[in-house]
Length: 260
Ligand code: SF4
Ligand code: SF4
Image 1 (cartoon, helix red, strand yellow):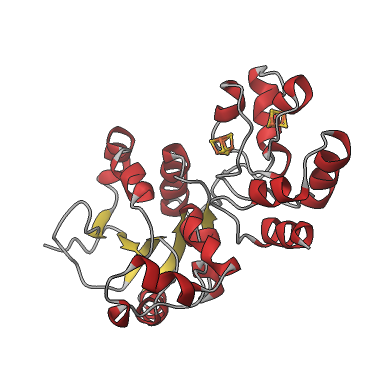
Image 2 (cartoon, protein in one colour):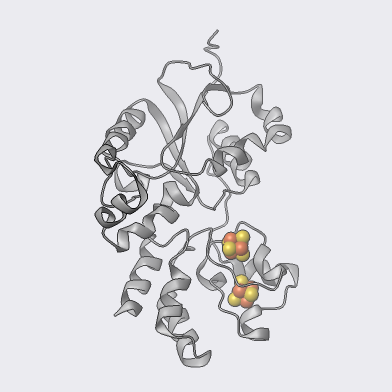
């Protein structure tokens, strides 16, 4: 039965791997603390129960890749008071946006035995390219503690306290030696939003940008620094920026510039 006293939270899936929804399921202990305060109204990965809208909060995972989804997202927006996109697919088009740099019509007959059944758009795009988004939660997948902070902030009518600074700040904070300085490893940390606790540099690997561009990044400067000081080639620079957030504007622009 629908409990009218509790805010209704709905979870929606578009083109994605479900990893961010799994992060949500992985929050069980933390969410139990807020579970009494909300009603999960739509979350197909967790339950078959569907409560009709309107919804107080919609969490949207995945990118827009089909004409049907391009229509569906508008219906969800109309049914939602607040709408938050979660993960690299929803906030930047995801790894599937790599096709945006090529002609998708060339791939379809190679991948599918019956290409005539495939209805797809030429590009994979972020939810924010189609509708107004109230907040974006970054990561591939998202950090489950960010999600708990987000839900708690929304329930209390305050701004979520999510970092917008770079992964380098997290590296310094945990005392991890810089992999670019120490071993000349390409690292996107200076332009990537914090949130993972500088996981990859702590294993002596460069960051590949799964949390997307930080606030006011300067990827042009980073790319020039790689190429002039670390002798990184232009194709290597392009590949470094073409990961999970390849179609996020700051990463896209710099990769297109160095492709020429
Ligand atoms: S390892 Fe990467 S994230 Fe860490 S300080 Fe160096 S450049 Fe920044
Ligand atoms: S260091 Fe970079 S690639 Fe690695 S988990 Fe963190 S944001 Fe993602």
